[in-house]
Image 1: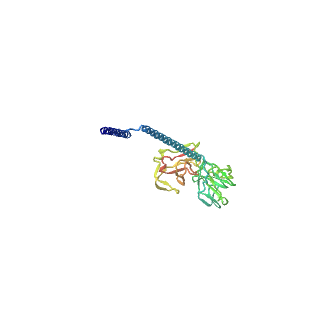
Image 2 (image 1 turned 90 degrees about the vertical axis):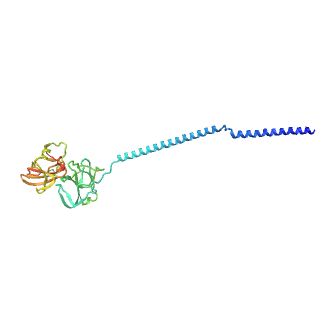
Image 3 (image 1 turned 45 degrees about the vertical axis):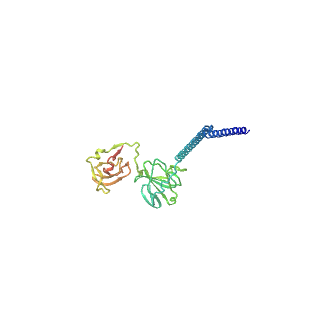
Length: 326
């Protein structure tokens, strides 16, 4: 009996050990499975993340393109706006200018119909004002407008009532002087265009024909004979290093040349093409010397003279000539 119980105890102990071993093995297998097995869902997670990144990049690129397009459109709009502004500025006409505003005035004088600077206590005149015959001018009140070419007087027109008046166009002039009386001194202006309400042909009086100067030669239709050429100016009949002054004296001036005597007829018309001093003689007797500064110009007419000498600066050696008009 005792043996039987012992046998049973031994059999039960082995079974218990076997159960424990099996249980331990199961735990070990479970631990290995948790540690070494690769998750099945990880590739799907990475693919999803890549897709999300790609979508984000695409959205960013589209946003950048949209911003760039908007920037380009805005820049184009700004450029077009600037061009329109420039075009509008170019199309807008310039405001008329009072060309005598900054010109000095001489009180107590006016330029009369003979071109003389005449003393009159109630009158005022301007100094010379540049004049361009290619455009219109308007004098705003009653006044006198005198035309000159250089220092050579041409004519004086009287615009004697109210205003504004579009003044006469005189192609032979390159400057004007405006004379006016005391009541007009604060209102008179000379505008460089035909202003609104201004009218033309309002000259009340003007210089008599016999006293009108010739002014600038108008080249259209000009024809004549050239009195000398370059061979003359560089030949033996031209002397260097002196000129003839207002007293008829030969004075030293290393920059000047003097021509020999040239025949002159006061009944003919001559045009000179370069600045010079013209000395007039009757035979060997000196009469006067006239200075020519604005060219081309008519030679001043000197009655009784039959010869001239020309004194000219060496800068004008290549462009000086005298033309006897037909």
